Length: 292
Ligand code: MP5
Image 1 (cartoon, rainbow, N blue to C red):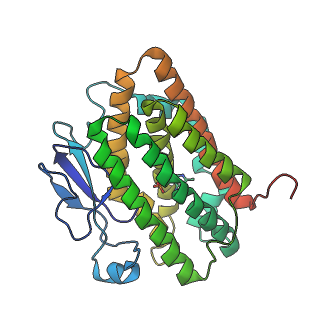
Image 2 (tube, protein in one colour):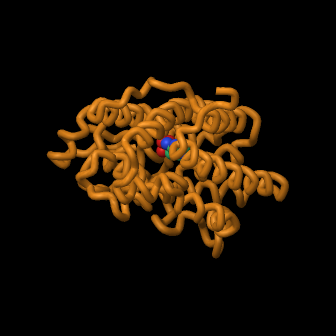
């Protein structure tokens, strides 16, 4: 979601909130922000912002007492790291998916990339009610950070719209694919039926998957590429800070969970990883629906 600010300390925890034109995004407390990547991947003012270096600003404040790198607390390995280790073979397969490699190498056909754009636009749209449905279950200290995620999702939709217009992709040209439909239903069912910690696991895993996936692309795609704004969006320093914030919160939720809930969280972690893999596969194949 654009360029972010990484905020190292804060009394509250709004992650991923749009900070354009504001010093602090709605929450009182101490905030120490570092500007992430210089450029913005624009939304309304994208390209212009990129040229002037006036990127959209986000902040990722962490609760006081939590270091930027120490968000998991004192445990040697928090829940998230434990799960990433457990699903590593799957995770690595996701990161070596041909869609990512071809995008990184500038070999992805435009119409394939357009499939991903159309589908991810729908996914991001659906992420709004997903996050909104988590709010009633969330501890009050998470309300503002979740609200920040929602406003950042709206900005992200604008990034898609701007890119689509720039490259001539008709974003509204397709219904959700089978995989995307399933993933969206999974998100919503999780938000409504699962516990908050379980839903938060899905949020973290999806965001971490995108951070890692776009980092693969970043490691090769020239920043002059028409697709680079997506790299900036998900593989920038600021998004890294946001993912790290989520990781700390997820670890804390897992530490408070009982063994049964923790086991379900692990299951959600793995399922989300599989959906992420399936999403790249769907984009690479231009998957239709059974019976089409
Ligand atoms: C994300 C995404 C990242 N846009 N699409 C998929 C399939 N997985 C994860 O989420 P967000 O909210 O766009 O950063």
